Amino acid sequence: MYESRDSKKSDAERQRRAKERAVREYQISQKRLSKCQYCLEAPDRPKHLHVAYGNLAYLMLPMSGRLVPGHCVIAPIGHVPSSRACDEDVFEEMRNFKKCLVRMFASQGKGCVFYETVTRLGGSGVVGAAASSHAFIECVPIPDARVDDASMYFKKAIDEAESEWSVHDAKKCISTAPPRGLRGAIPPNFPYFHVEFGMRGGYVHVIDDESRWRVDLPRDVLVGLLDLPENVSRAKRRPLAPPALKREMDAFLDAWDPVDWTKQLA
Image (cartoon, rainbow, N blue to C red; front, side, top):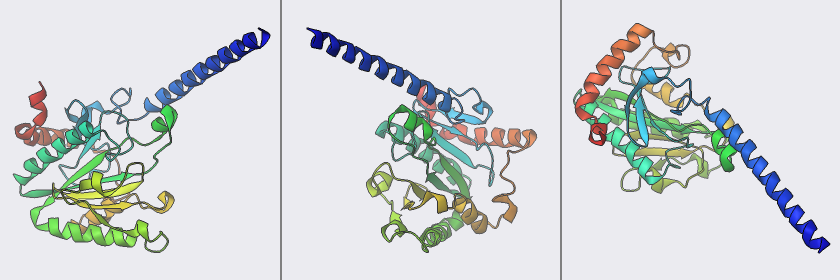
């Protein structure tokens, strides 16, 4: 009888502690997510940069570091660490945005370079998930005539990026051309860099050492490819002035409207 009572007390105490731990973890995760500017629930999210919303993903202009007019960002609405880790329906919505951007810029004689850098994967549980970065894919339009050059520039940059110190397998530049795609090229839960040229695929590289990976690699490649001023890459990674931002947003919205797939959701 006494053992039974003690056992019940012990079970009740474990349940109480587990409940308290779950509440603490939830509160910590919510505090972290409230500071993520890509989460739509965050109070400081840059609403003035948002262009269009799907059910599971959205399109916006970059918060800072705009390379060229038309530079934009696709992000999942949920806080997930990478497009590779997204559920299939989220991944497909992000592809819908890509396809529409390809059509939009094709009408301007331009191709699209999409790139994503995935680091800070966090860990398991709600706290670990909230500690990870929020996935986002950047899209930079470039002249059609430079798309093939872009593929060569990026492959060379990726091949050289960790050549001095990474393990052999991590140095590989893995093709993501259809039908394989990103999801068929690498498993989830790995840090990686992925670059894609329109909808024809590109290259993914598993990052061996996050502390040594150059997060500015895609910006540096595009600065060189497009012959942009050197200081665009680092020194001028600041937001556009409000008048310039308004002009760019108005121009982007005008170009986006004819291809906007989210109108089908209304």
